[in-house]
Length: 449
Image (tube, rainbow, N blue to C red; front, top):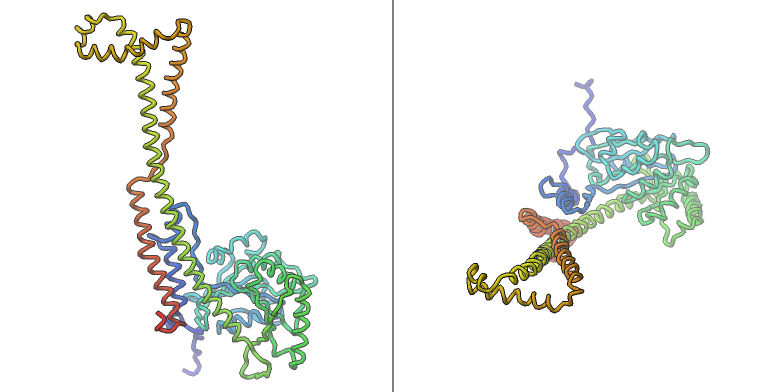
């Protein structure tokens, strides 16, 4: 019926989209880490090593003075009206904009559950109350592999923020993969607060920073735009941390077919920058997967080698303990037995133990008796004290070596480590090679493989 309104369709429903190779590679790498049975995080944890699963998306933080076009750019990229736009300070907190299964809005705590690596923000009082996430089903451009962070509009003067906005934005920037700084030629492009934050970010993560002159179509004629850009560049170059060679600031604006402009629009370069960062993230993830596999394998090898050393050391300690214990019992026993046998006549001993054993006892104890007779009578008591101390020391050494045993792996534990090693060598590394080939096939020629 003509009076019925059709429901607004989302920009690109999830069911009708095809997963890109990069998205699939990042997801499969992530799954190798978090698998419940043989995940690398679980294996590493059993070895006392802490691993973090790689992100499935890159983080792009957009900052600038208020009304610089940050939210408008996100809406344009996503091709869905998610963020409010206007001259007023519409964005007063931090908003994550990401792709998901259904359209949803999340509050502070739920957002931190979705992005746990941003939990350090809890240190900044009041940030959680101004933290949110917008989940969209859009899969336009590379949005399925990107999470945007829309930051508060920055102004100078008496504007009071409910949290330490400078430190919070800096903390966000350290976690992000890219930082876009938008300068509005019609607004406070030279906002000191913006420049101060940019200078601080440049010290810690200058390679992530990208500068853009937004709303370039509203800056008047080409000469006006050039004048504004020169003012911004000169102000940036006055800052020691931002005085760099080859400084670039592309001009961008949201295309509007109903309002054509002769101004050069380099907004496609922004998309290329995002895509390049995604490709680098895929390469870094695959490289990190290789490093983590090698780390686990080396840890397993060290554990098994240490176990072999512990087994050898335990055998040596048991032998030393046994030897010292035997000496501690044998020496005083033969000493006492020598004096007891010396009290018997040979004929009496023959009748008790037999002629053969009697000869053996007389020979072995005769040495002790001879040495005893050789010791001066005045020193015999001292010898007994020293001899008793030596025997006691032997017992002490036997007890000491018995306590030196190190913990060793059980057969079950060794088997488990061997299974882990085989799994990483045969499954994970093989999977990594296939994923790398799949990624390279997107750009390299077929005959290169």
